[in-house]
Image 1 (tube, rainbow, N blue to C red):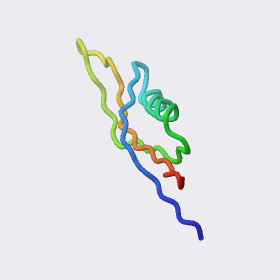
Image 2: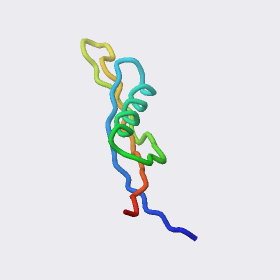
Image 3: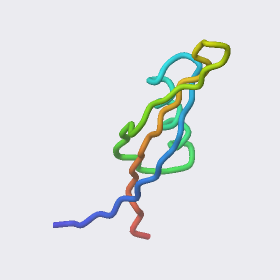
Image 4: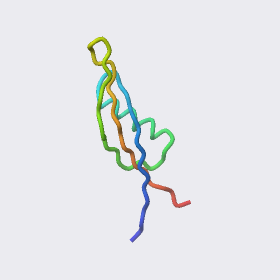
Length: 70
């Protein structure tokens, strides 16, 4: 059996449209600099409010990626 090691980081993605787009933004940005992304899990959702209206959706996203065997 081959063993693998994964690292987990937490990111905050934002969107002025939805939590789904905020989560996707976090994963997309992580994918620009991290290789071998495996799993993403939303750990928290919140929003900022300005003048009584939702201004920004925010998602905390835990992303895991495989640690290379170099």
